[in-house]
Image (tube, rainbow, N blue to C red):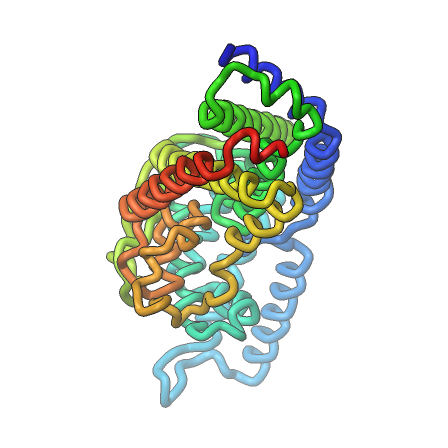
Length: 402
């Protein structure tokens, strides 16, 4: 009986016009990203050979002017030679341009890393506009600077052939990591709510058949909820594999044996404030939090379905819960209702940023951790389970289908 009901509910979800339209929308978004958005997207590591050529020509003209007026010595106040510094910078960027044109990207990345580390780079100036409205612009710039250097060093440590998409963070593996650290996570969780919003209400039209089903009401609700949970994970997994396949064909797969930088403490974000975890550990922790949140939202939708008996009301309320952190979020908000924000489940909906410690960096607190996130989410699930059990007793099968 349980297997038959599960199969029946799963087939209803597969044939649901509402679900299939939304899956089509997600698929179109995925194709647009893979073929339109990402190919035209510039990252902090993108290299423009034409712009570099213009800069080299400008530096060459400046050097000729300095030689013509005899300004090739050391400054009296600084003790530095602008001429010598510019000459060195010219040779360094010229080598980078030639390495790029020769597609020797291992040598190119070595040179790019050195330009950042030695100060012969405009990296900080280039990203300054991005953090112009930030409450801590210098701290944010240095955070991005460290993360970028860590990525370069990780690639160079592989000892494998480096490609330009790897440098730009556009391989399939890197794109998945970046997606899990971006607002895309909210789209994934909204899909969970969307698919689960009508799991209890979609077959209320079959009142006589379902009221006569020889199975306890609470067990029926659990099977319906588990069906939605399974269906949602299957759909998102298939979409992920599709995106990974397309990006692998375009930019390459990348490497799994890379390290992911993690913020360990809320400090000044120097090198010692970071640690490294294996990419496999990052995926394991990220997907474990994701699965817990999927289950939480799924059960929440089940409770709301019993209370309101309308899928659109369920969708609306659950969506408000999903985005509830955005109503009060700021870089200086550390308490909500007098309690640390780390005690609220919505703090962990950006699950990728929780695993990498980005939440620690953004909120300037040390309490938002993976371990505490799992604990808070599991406690929330227990409370929802108790609520669901009580509500299922209050709103029984007969009352729900009345």
